[in-house]
Amino acid sequence: MKILYVGGIFTELTSSGLHHIGRLSSLEDLCLAHNQNVDDDVIYAISRGCKKLRYLDLSGCTEISDYSLTSLSSCYNLRTLYISYLDRITDEGLSSISRQGTLETVYLRGCPNIGDQGLLTLVLLCPYLQLLDVSGCQHVTNVTVTACLDSVQARSSGKKLLLITGGTSINLDALELNSPLLEVSRNDYCINSLRPERIDIFDHESDEDDTTVRRDQGVISEDDEIKEPTEETEFA
Image (cartoon, rainbow, N blue to C red):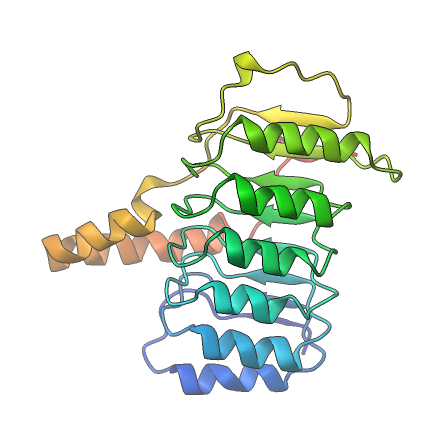
């Protein structure tokens, strides 16, 4: 098996059952988005057994932490990583996974504990990075844009980087962007109802709100997060 999608709500699928994904040694594409049974132990098992993994979607898997990102640093074939809407990952975890050096596409939408430091390491250690979406990461500032500019100018590959910055603390008007290798978008693709802090609030308000959030999660994991960049974000 090369492709497996088990994102969303699976009432009969436990964390123990998800451990067995680690036995799929030929697995290349894996979507676990918004599956609340995914935890650090599950990701550790996957990182140990799925060394051919190229695409991984962990968006909304709120039980995972920096430990998972450290585990995934041994997956040297990993190219595309979705880690949006996670409040237990920090700059430390992002720095850890960056050391594998092969990431090309990273989605980090709505991560409240991600800031410039982790992104500096990411753009420095991943020279093939072509798309970085930090929509809704409010602690990200102009420091990240400057680091991206320095990184692309030092590239020998000539690969272009698209940086998506809507909903951050970045002020593009204060920057001089003069490299054809860096495209910066002001678009904000972060969906506020999926932000981990918003979900926590809804969980305490009513069962009806919780149902609404979970229904939204299923829609997003199928129609939004799983898709590759659209024409708006694609580039040669």
